[in-house]
Length: 483
Image (cartoon, rainbow, N blue to C red; front, side, top):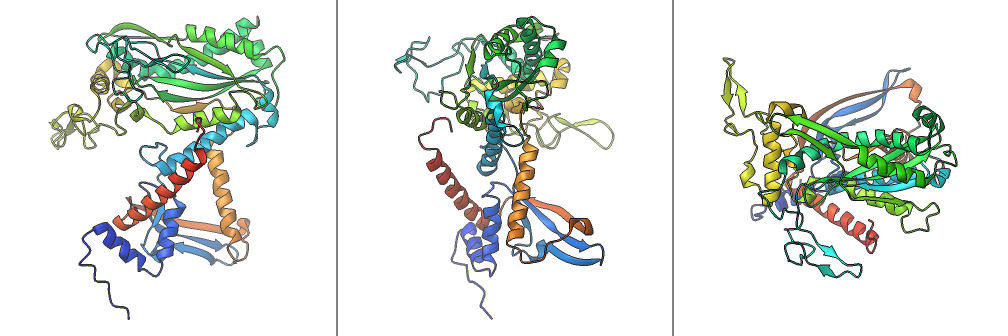
């Protein structure tokens, strides 16, 4: 019998745990679990079992139980799309987004290759100005020009995007614009179809019978804390990507409709606190045609990679935090119902409703003021439905970071199903047991959530896996500014 390890001289708890794991007879299985989830930052731990029964003979033909695992549990990936929270899962999300976007540009994933001959535009819609901010202007030759403040800002200057005059900057307007950006995009797509019909001198009913407007878009935060949208907009036949639009439905006609829809798309917000305000798009609009044969400056691959890159980003790229500021005990309300039915101040946040004081956040004063503005507006009755206190850490933006029209291409769910099927087939290829008839088998499973995260030793193994994957990705994308 092997003597137990004497680890009293090992001061590090993580190293002590790793040594114990390494001496386990099934250590390879521990590593295999971590490799399978690609070193996920905060995996979900499950306990349970699954059985596959033959219904004809009522016998168990296959079974699995976490009791047979060396750690007594199964690790599954967290699935978080944010690169700041889980680099591993976000890479997988970005890869799925890349294939989704590219399928709508080049074909594949149930989309015919002829879709690349359809009129396709890459459009960027920006937010309006709520006050002058520090910026970095350059000439075509790359020479750095002075800002309005007289300083030639470096590319990494933290002052970039912050107001020249914080006391006069319209923080209320900026937060409310973020909060309504998703609704403004929906209104833009409505006006786009109307303006396209008007440009082509036909009714909307006739337009809908002749063609379909398909799109996919992603949101990106600017340094000033406001979102703008990058979108692929495509013209199809009435049934979608499997048929071309009429010849008279050109990229030029779509461009003119986009420009007109940008001006017409306006939302009116009224309240006792701010009066009546109109919100629309900023004056900066970029519309580029995507090369049909892949030999232009803006190719299918470049556009798909560009959109996928921003699909895993979030508000933290503008300098804010990547976590909710709501107190988990009172859900941000600042009070809890006592046993007598009266409201009692939350003992955890002392009535602020915040998980951590906004004043103590390690962020720039400009970002802190946007967070504070969103928090305060969210507690006004007229803005209650916006739940801005819930999205204060997102500077008010509460829409989907990426979305698409139904007929643009495949879906993320379909891509995940394909990957799941592929993994199942790979497992069957290495399984020497006989093939099962799905019509005569029954799978019975019992699973329960245990916890999240790793043991200290597993975290060291996961960190190495993440490092290896990041190094491989860095070498793969080196020299490609679009990835």
